[in-house]
Structure formats: structure tokens, C-alpha cells
Image (tube, one colour):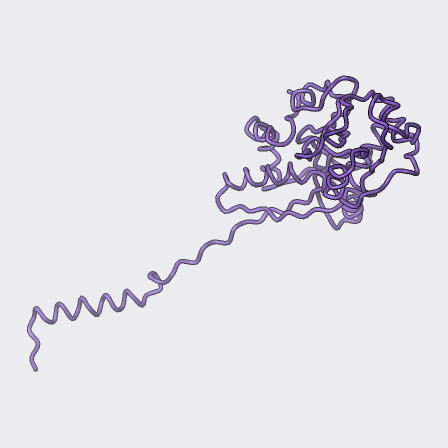
Length: 271
């Protein structure tokens, strides 16, 4: 059969389309892998780190966070042994040779059952409570209910800060009950009118009543101004100044844009 010129042109176009369909240029384009920024943090800094990492990654094309957490004590050990380069924590120890940079402000808060009529404690009474000198709430103007002291797990940033800032060289009462996690602390206080514990302002949740200290209630405003007696700073600590993506992230956290994000959980750095 003889094929005319118009038909030849159609066959040529069809052949070209087949060739193009099989060419490398038309194959599915491979998506570039997203960059994962590894970041470790003490358990008590979870709310802050999750908030900042979510907001930052939403603005950065191709960037995710690889987050990991542990107790402050465990992370400090990993840092000293070289297994870890940096981590974020609300507790800063005097460590020779370590680099640290402030990221936000938080506060150490004493919390009780919502039905506890007490609203305010002096710092001195708070110390006496945790030393075991006050056994009944009526000694502080409350109901005739036994005090149930709760303390956080060993090695947690909250406990290390509590002992350093409130107790100092004083010993924690032998009657204090150690709870294994923040969730357990919340559960016990919500179930026991006589219980008292401590956590960070960023960890406050429904079912817990925060106490004012020396007449100042913990709030973003009182923490930001420094009026709240147990205000603390959240730091990133490491073996030296960071570079690359981590440095850019920290720069954003300390910028006006990053500090504005903090209002959802704690307080910005003083300006």
C-alpha cells in the first residue's frame, strides 16, 4: 500500500509523540528530600520547642525537624560525652566551657487542687511546706486537710530548678512523693484536694490551680516583667556556637517574629 504525504506527516507526529513519551524528560520528577534539622530538648521544654518548630517549619520550604527529648540530666550527660551537640532546657547549670543562648522566659509554678481555698503563698511558706514543717493546710488558713507534697522525677529540669531556686541548700522533705512524669503529677493533684506540686508556667493545664507567690500570680505579663519571683530563662546549650540551619533557626527565635510566637505558651525575652 502506498501512503500519501498527509498520512506520512501524521505517522511522523505520532512517532515523535511516542518518542517524547518515553524520553527521560517526561518521567515522574523526583521530589527533593526535605532537610531534617535535629533538635534535642529537655522534657520540660516540650511545649516551647514544639510550638517554635511547627511555626518555623511552616515558613521554610523543604525543612522539617527531627525532635528528641529526655530528662535534663540525661541530655547533659550526652552533651559532656560528645553524643549530643546542643539541647534546649529551662535549667542552666554553671558549666565551664559550655556555650548558651537565651530563647524565652518561663516560670516555676506551685499548683494545687482547684477546690483548695488557698490562693497565695509566701516564698518562705513554700519552702517550709517542702521542708516538711507544715503538715496541714489549716496552718496556712486552708481546710483541715493533710498536705500531700509532690516532687518531680529525679533529673528533670523542673526539679533541678525547684531545688536550686526555692530550696537552695535546704533538704526536701522525706515525706515528699516523687512522681514519674508530668502527666502523673497532674493526675494526682486533680484527684487529691490536699496535694501540691510544681511545674512550669508553659505546662499549666485545666484542673490545676496556680498559686500566687508573695502576692504575684504567674502570668505572661508577670513573667515577662520579672515581677513573678520564680521567673526563669529557657536556653539552648552546647559545646560552641552553632552554624548553618540551626543558627538560622535560633536567630529567628530571638527575632521579633519568633518572640511573638511565644505568647502561646510562655513569655518573650526582655527587651
